[in-house]
Length: 300
Ligand SMILES: [Zn+2]
Image 1 (cartoon, rainbow, N blue to C red):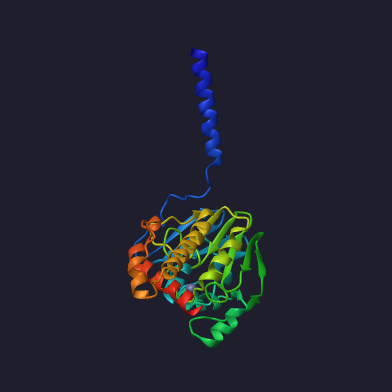
Image 2: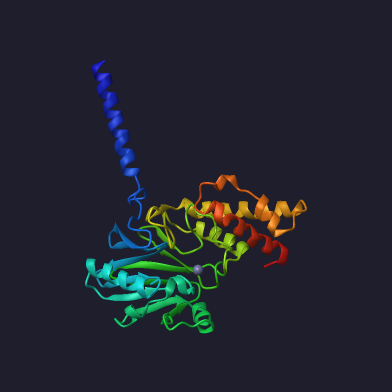
């Protein structure tokens, strides 16, 4: 009996060690932390950091030859971000990568521009910022069409464009070695779509997410999330976001097909109880519904 017991212990130990090696390498269960209207930083290891300011997030990558920064957010957040970077390295900030054209994510870059950083964005950012200029938002120095691979200090950051979805310049960033995506606005884990979905095109959004799902990645860092949400999530959050949008569109369409055409009535009657635990389900679902009503009613 004793030997059987020992064998069982051995097998259990072996199984546990197998489970341990299969464990994700990033601290997914740990929330970002910090105060709601404050900022916080999470060191994911190997030079990769997540910076949070209120519900906004970006990533920065510290390499042997300098630092790559993404979305500076606004002047106040950018200054906090630079102070946090200076706590971990004195290497120069070489690049600032814009995720898309919206000022709420990409204002405040002058602080890095003054230090000599080059700005990178999709080529459509040039037109969008020319149409809606802001003295707080420097123009990109380097632009691209479909893809661009940024290399610094032996590290790579791949930028990919999937066409219109949220504006017409949204870039998904991928760290190929770490298999991490940084996605802004089109994936926010466990949250319904933002309010009335400003500048979101529902069908193109779903198409883009399907294409993004084909990339090689295991993890997602999202451009939004409060302090109680983790810094990093599993890849499945991309398909969860897509399925939410599909469920939303089907629910609104079938209500309209059965004769309900008033957006006010649809806001009251369409429910998606599967998502009742997602952030802002009660507050924003009616606004999501009205946006999808407009899509089917107006073709927009
Ligand atoms: Zn946006």
